[in-house]
Amino acid sequence: MTDNPPDDVNGLLWAAQRGMGALGEKMGLTFTEFSVERCVATMPVEGNTQPVGLMHGGAYVVLAESLGSMAANMFAGPGKLAVGVDLNATHTRSATSGLVTGVCTPIHLGRSMTVHEIVVSDDQGRRCSTIRITNYIKSVD
View 1 (cartoon, helix red, strand yellow):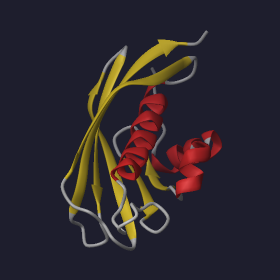
View 2 (cartoon, helix red, strand yellow; view 1 turned 90 degrees about the vertical axis):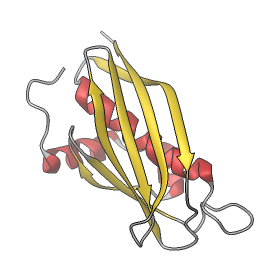
View 3 (spheres, one colour; view 1 turned 45 degrees about the vertical axis):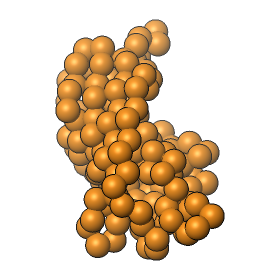
C-alpha cells in the first residue's frame, strides 16, 4: 500500500500517466478529480446511448468500473495490481443529453480487497445509477 497516497493534483497526474484505456477513451471519459478518497469523471451522453436515445446502462458501468478500478490501483500502490472481482449496478434514471458525472468513494480499503461505490448523476444532479465494485489486490512482483 502507499504510505503517502497522492493528493488530488498528483492523483490527476497519476491517472493521466496511467491512461484510461481504449474503451474509456472511445466513450469520452474525462477525469476531473483523483485521489484515494474521491475520484470524479465525466462522460458525454451523446455517442453512449441505446437506440431509443437513453444513456446505455452499460455506459454507466464503464464509467463506474473505470473509476473504481483506477482508484483501487492507486490505493494498491507500486508492485500491486487491483483486479475487479464483482460489480453491481442499479439504474434509477436515464440521462438523455449533456454529461453524466461519476463520483467514486471507498467503502472498504483493505490489504487484499477494496470496495468502492460510484454514483452517476446527470447534468441536473439527479442520480442515474449506483454501482459497487470490489477489487482484489494482488502482487505483481
